[in-house]
Image 1 (cartoon, rainbow, N blue to C red):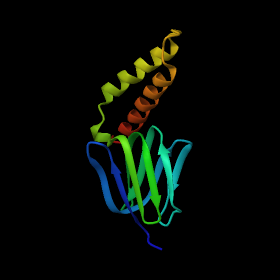
Image 2 (cartoon, one colour; image 1 turned 120 degrees about the vertical axis):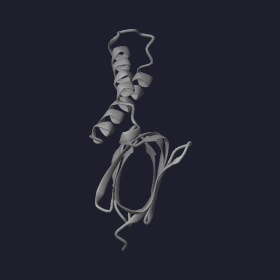
Image 3 (tube, rainbow, N blue to C red; image 1 turned 180 degrees about the vertical axis):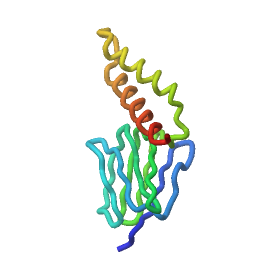
Length: 136
């Protein structure tokens, strides 16, 4: 069995990652994180908002992702995400402001607030901040 697999992470705008030397990847699935190693059984999963972590040449890399799908094959993982950002691409100030806005909406007591949308915004901002912190 091979020690690595091909990994592609794609958004509607660009190909964010393309490597044939991924050693492992952790994906934020809709029902929790999935750890993928070479030779993994085939599966398709819906992505949640969170952090994709992958190891290539013994170096760990992190991306903030939001929504999409992942296809896992024994020798290839393809992640189709609505958004995917490397730590250096994240505007920390903007992410903090988005987190504060979402928290204010959730604690406002206003019945007209779309709670699901506010929670999505909060989770996305938290994921972006977590990934950005790994760039330091």
